[in-house]
Image 1 (tube, rainbow, N blue to C red):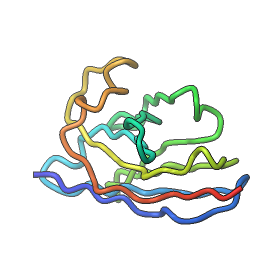
Image 2 (image 1 turned 120 degrees about the horizontal axis):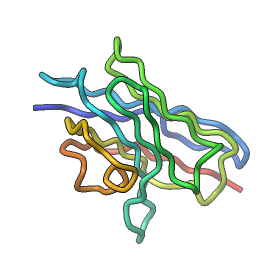
Image 3 (image 1 turned 90 degrees about the horizontal axis):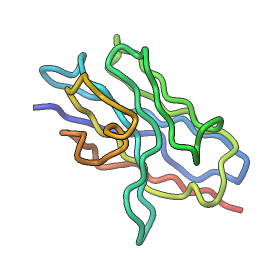
Image 4 (image 1 turned 180 degrees about the vertical axis):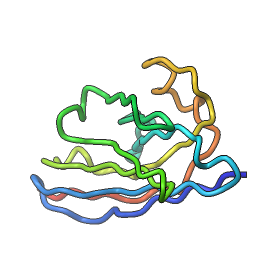
Length: 128
């Protein structure tokens, strides 16, 4: 079993920055690919970014490309999402998903069903 926990959310003014962290623990946590999603009230869960288990490949949603950066520190089993130039429309619960699947495409990693394990999420609020 894999346990996923997100942290780092909070309240920030528009134009500000936040760094979210996701820690995966468990038997296979060191070989998991990870993805960040967000879900605003009344909206569907939205893909943001993905990183392979070794950090060699990343994908981003067009809506956050250039503002969000995903990276990992495998020694700490941590995947982080650095967010800059935040906008009020970035307000949402941010969730981290983990998957043991290695073969991937840009389409598959953006789907919720690709991920076997999820955290509870961390709230990000951006004020105007």
